Image 1: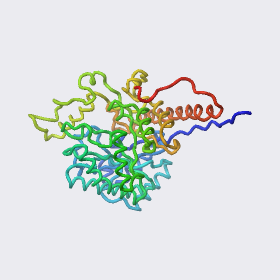
Image 2 (image 1 turned 45 degrees about the horizontal axis):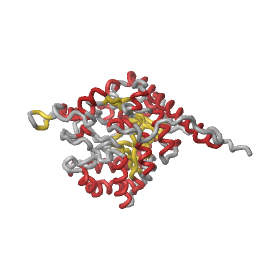
Image 3 (image 1 turned 60 degrees about the vertical axis):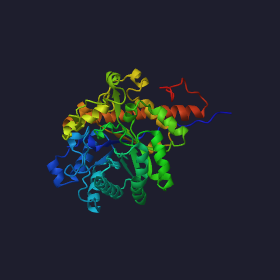
Image 4 (image 1 turned 90 degrees about the vertical axis):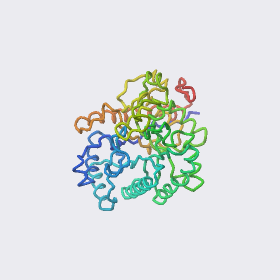
Length: 415
């Protein structure tokens, strides 16, 4: 009796790009006067670089932000300007631009500390996030990506209590609008000049599960999902395959609902000097034994991270198999294979959002940045298509005919 023959049908993922990659695509004096011009120009730029979707970045306007740009490692972008609420007229204009360019919207992103200690600042962020939620509904997307954050004045268990008190209501607002909140897992070590390292409590699989259980208790489990970024895993000495295996083993393979495509290249010398906790003192963010009042000095808090690593724009780091094995950079092919093999996902509905934070290439010039992003988007698409082909060939075509897969590949928990 002949064995069934499965068709070769690879399922690539959707490619998107975070608009913070080029903050000044539209000069400030133009976009402040005409806020939605920035979105129109980013949609056109996305088409030029070959990305069929954008992740639209929102942020508090620089005039009202509680964190000065000088204190940020990677300043955020308010491509979506919400000083005034986003209404149907604005949505019609943006949707017309999407139709004209053929570029879609993967989701919205607002990356801020939603558990910040100062109650007034926290309320401002909460109110702003509601504006982001409302804009998402008007623009027809079903997800918003952001952080949970941390109250630096509290220990971790106290932050869990605070999460239940102040973050659950935010998820209830998302539920009322039919939205999913995708949490990015960066630990944000440089968010504070204190010696706190994990400043976003949703930083790894075990914390995700603990937070999700709180969400389930309040009926918003379906609203809490993870927007996974492998650069943060490398920063914390983890590897993607083992993290995905952990989620599967614990019954939470459904939690990951999107990807930021950004790498991390570990500096072995920096790790030798300071370890994975980064530079612990004499960073320059404290002057004469107390926190500096100068935001430029406060940016030195990021040496907790930057002394041991540097962000990678996909495709810009050398191909280094030994570094992959040592978890010192991202193995993009294995990343995409592991996602298909271990997570509860439909690859064709998953979004890969290219996030550009490689410092030497963060050029705020459209003409100069265009070929850089174009190359990274092409690399991301190609590596995902290769993974889709390998998965379909091995796990569908060959499996249907009982043909074994050769070798072992990378295995979880061995790295």
